[in-house]
Length: 196
Image 1 (cartoon, helix red, strand yellow):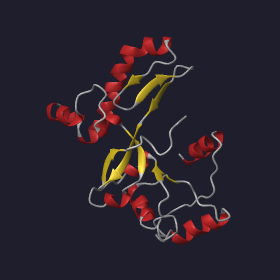
Image 2 (cartoon, rainbow, N blue to C red):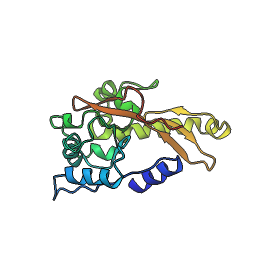
Image 3 (cartoon, rainbow, N blue to C red):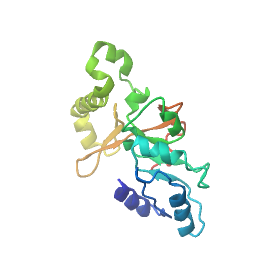
Image 4 (cartoon, helix red, strand yellow):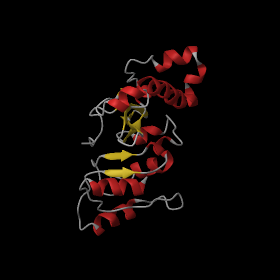
């Protein structure tokens, strides 16, 4: 994910001013964060990109302010959901990450995930993500001709906005979530950085 992020940022004219690797063996990230800012010539980052599991992200989140990075927006990959713990995830509040719209209550004409889960137990808990991808596979089968014939066509799916590119590959634009009170909520602005 880091290599993809680097490439995407550079393609769009962005600049990575510093990188910090974190490890469970050294839980004090403040010196590494401060060193990265010094190496960048004192430039303050516009955002922090986190490619971390929940445990490491919680530790980093608690050290952002002491490192002098208070108020810098934080964006994570969905890896941040690995090791989620509602009681402890309040430490992740304010971090945005890509999420399935269906799990955020952004149904787009689909049934409510919780209501459906009462009827179909496999549609809730750990199976909810797989169920959402199954719903979208069915939708793609129905709308494939439309997507192939109209380059501007999209399907609002359980996993995101679905389109076909010129090579026939399905592209998915997920929704954006933000941790609030330790729970994922739809991000108020849709994402910190819109894909233009």
